[in-house]
Length: 344
Ligand SMILES: [Zn+2]
Image 1 (cartoon, rainbow, N blue to C red):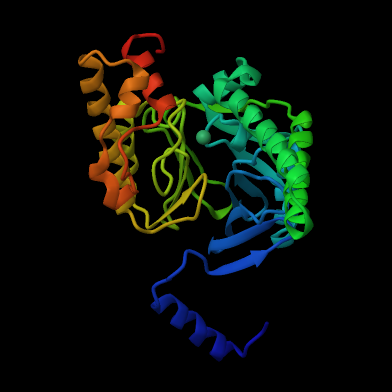
Image 2 (tube, helix red, strand yellow):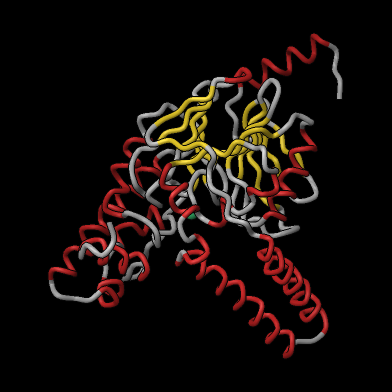
């Protein structure tokens, strides 16, 4: 689309004057992704359901190359991401930042070839060079996908007509994902950091920050100060994150660090981006209250299972939808293990 220069200038000044309602300036739909251009040359990539991607990614175009954050759940999903990048730019993808070690963010890495620089926290390196194939969170995901396939096969056996066809489509989607897992090669970072690192190349400033333990022992917040955007991986989603590898008692403090940055837009590892920064306060309050509640119940002699059933966090109903008694058992069990000194 072209417009006379004066019209175009008027349009641009109009766009600048109006606060953005959604998060994107422009949306590009590829075969496998929705790319939301959240600032010039910066695209928030979410899967469109053509194949299983599970997590979000960020594409950052620089003068001569491209940096990406996270790579999805399998090499096949990573290749789909690369194909989608090719829709918006021909520049080489030289650098990949891992927000954290989890399978659904890091297992697409091999799609980007052997020469790419992979930057991650030291803990991400330790996890991916340790025994990643036997990490509990990864193993339980394999189980979950196998169960999903078995469940669909069962339902197809009992279904007919349009419902059966719909279930068959779902089955093929999940079977394709399970097959894609055969290609996984755990690939650790080639460059690590402990606290902070800044990339200045190609007309961009990209800051990497570690503020403490939260969703894992090595979560990075990737901050673009000029654009006032932060990619938070899973340390900050729109609501409560998965806590099975988390440090719930430390999480609120870590998010306090995040809040020291100046940003207007949060791009999380799952779910849509958001500008409502109160969400950070809300989950901080939840993690703090969950910590206190679990300590209280443990002191009363309840085991983890009992504590998970009894934990009362319904004061978070309005902000986080916690309207039932109880807390996630995996999270509570892990909190017990940490309090008992079974986990560092
Ligand atoms: Zn995660």
